[in-house]
Length: 291
Length: 243
View 1 (cartoon, each protein chain N blue to C red):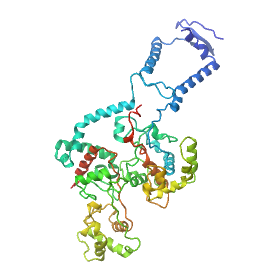
View 2: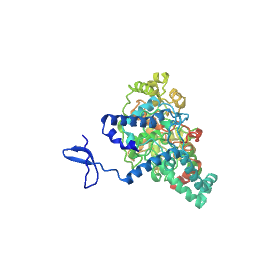
View 3: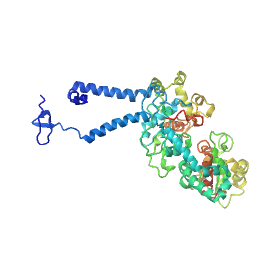
View 4: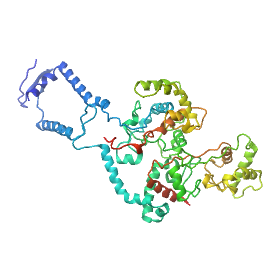
């Protein structure tokens, strides 16, 4: 069936096939293409020798160049660590106060702290530390539940709050609305008084004041100034974490007294290195009115 | 080179061509696929990787059902920028009990391979209910429907099936699957609970703020909280996992 013809115009033979009078030229591949093809084959053989390629029964050929993507990464990280070590070792050695006082070190810590905050902290505390109303405290103000000194902040970031870490900050507000602790009227009176604490005129002499003095001052102190060591927030100002908006403020207090909510924060000590945590502490301290 | 001149004979004969294609595919498969099952270095030898607890596995199924992998990868590649942001690069060993694995290939959202423990349960629930409540610029959809009760009827069957494909659940674990599932979402015993002992590093407790119902939210958050936490990298010999 194959009938090869010579085509005068192109100077090539046909393949010998014919479909409805259409014949196909059997033009050889361009020389450059053939050379590139064979060059690739030779390159592949070189690649087998140089790079990790061939599987063996229980292992694979490592290649003469000893390439390893994970090894490369380890080297890169080592180089990076060296490049940063000038600052990181200084940060590790310096106290938080020293970092704050040293202008160049502070500059570095602020830049590094900002990046680490964006990746690790802003999910809850918001970019710039604005916080989430009713859930996560605002860091860009001068109200601190567990203390706002450099050391307090550093401690909180390292070990977190009410988590599994043995060093984490722990405290639990008691539920006063259950059992025989406080009845409904008493809770109501107490909420009225606590609400008044944050105004300019606390309701002195009210029944709520007596209940507060008896039940709450152990942690929240007289006048509701709070105790940082226990994470008992100050009640004598208008910064509230779990209160809600103005209309539901009293209900928010009633809820907290009867069914307390407790904020939780993860520990970062295992996840971030010591220098990064210091940078974060300095950065967070700078956000608002760090004490 | 005369052998190359006769290739037309193979190419124009259906039988020889089919045999040739078959041989090529067989060789390709033998060289590229089979060794992955026999080479010992494919799966790194590290301690700590365990099968998912029933609640985590249920959460994993929800993760797949909701298509989380369409926007989130679970694969930290061995690149400097990824390791800096997400933590230690992912090991093959860490997804050896994943059927199917959730490495994924697209990151509209961040990688989740080491999201376990990074945020609190409370944050995860809030974020899943409406991501913009906590991350104003987020484009992730809300998943408030996950607050419905979890269908627990299939869990034993699921784990049994996984065992068939090689996940080493013990008879004990299969027998207690349902009890473990409920316990993980309700116990207050923490690390002392039976579930935490049967599945080390499992995060236990009420996740979604409703201890009465084991919800899909409980399951998904339990899964998210264990991601990337099983291997303790401070104990890993890095020369042994280098590839």
